[in-house]
Image (cartoon, rainbow, N blue to C red; front, side):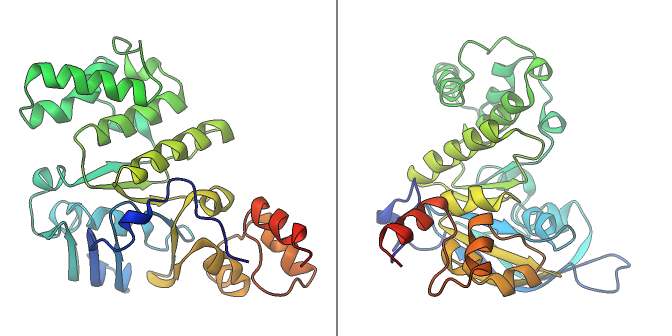
Length: 291
């Protein structure tokens, strides 16, 4: 039985040219004896929401830092291969210029907050782009509303809850309308409702055409929302495909240190044949079909 398209899927983007291209990327940090990343190649198109899975130390953060040039420009490393975003060489283009193409969100939102008010935090990127004042006000107000932070523009960022801070950081990263959004464990420490809220925002951004790469350990959430999954193991890309294909290959995923969804583990344990369900919706459809 075919899996339903994830929420936010925009079929019109399926044939689009890749926005992000990673070709033969290898990274070795100074004084390291092994590569942090080895010969990675993949592409992401506009409108795709792609999940990145792997154990701690698999190379996920290293990969994220290559996508906007932080590695090797600000963090020294020997890098081979190429990374291009909208045709721009991310490894050699100044990081400040890459900020217009790649929005970055990390797992500790407070570490990214630097302004006195929520509104100023969102406006910071627009100011650096010399956006006219009236347009800036309109875009900040819209970003606040979209992030569920309407009426909080004058609040100090650090007085917000963890979930609100993460939505603020996401709003600040997207208000400049970068074509690629990269998130490194953006829901770490958040409760299930806050995680679902963040992923709902990511789905909306993907629907609007933004390419999204998100590092996330919640495999159930990724199974429900991602269009594709990438799995890293010891710096190597060991899987790249639809959630059902990747997570349904239980032996390979577990060998890479990645947990499969509970519904998938149960289906495998009882010896279910055929494609294994990776969401509760999959299981319900399979059971309803009498398989």
